[in-house]
Amino acid sequence: MYGLAYVLFDGVTGDLQRTLRGRMAPFQRGGEDLFPIERLAFDDDTADLEQLHVASVTFVRSEHGGVQYGVPEGLSYDIDGDAVRDLLAAWGGEGFEGRLCDVEPDFDAFASRFWRRKKRDARTGRYGQWYNPLGRWDWWDLGGRFDSAILGKRGEHRVRETGLISSGASRGRDMVEGLFEVFGAAGELDALIEANVEPVSHLLEAAREGRRHAFPSAIVLPDMYPEDLRWVETPFFGDEHYRTGLPNLRRHLGLAPEMTFESVCRMMYEKHVDLAAAGVAFHF
Image 1 (cartoon, one colour):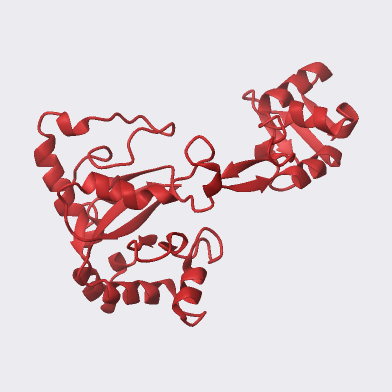
Image 2 (cartoon, one colour):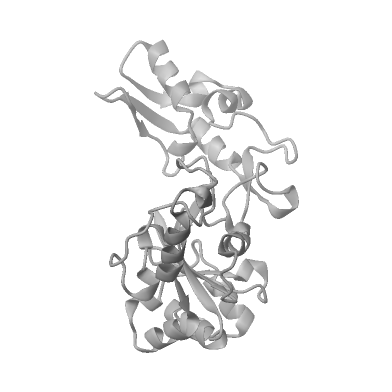
């Protein structure tokens, strides 16, 4: 899924790539491969695995060769699909119904066989993974699929969908570095910045008029705020406590709990009216 973040910065675009990467870096999703352990939190899956071990489950081979899962809600994505297919092959049929503890009574052996990550975490002795608790994105682009949205003119300009100013290469997409050296990239870069960087004063005016483009999926605040408060996201699917720093920011600033994301946006635009904002499409 994709969202649109407005990243507030001092307006100097001489090295916008470095500026945006620095502002967005704390919010990259990832684990020990990207962050030092002190920045991470542990997501403990042990209780879920214990539930899965003794639950009644069904696995049915679909007509296209895949497998349909009937397992406790929220647990199917933790199962090793290859292990399930091997189980079906061993049973010599198109389906399995029963308890995995009857197939593999030892819990550790069950986890090693059927859980995607296979092993206990050496630090905690539990089953789970370390993750960045501030993580919000897998990759991002200046503009991208939201090109010109920050101007209220989405779709009127057409520059590169991805590439010129971005998070760079990632496992999640086909990206290459060095795009600034491509012939003609300088002109495209100017067009990209012009279409996707806007004075905060203009966003404030639009917000006061209630114009939709003034309110993105998230705003990324300047460094004067604590790191865990800088990413402020609109309530996601109606649950403002999911993937959003809005409640924490309201408490930090002493704002009323019922103050909406749109009201907070207007307040931030008023407070930082001398800054600029970059419209960044992010994937999560």
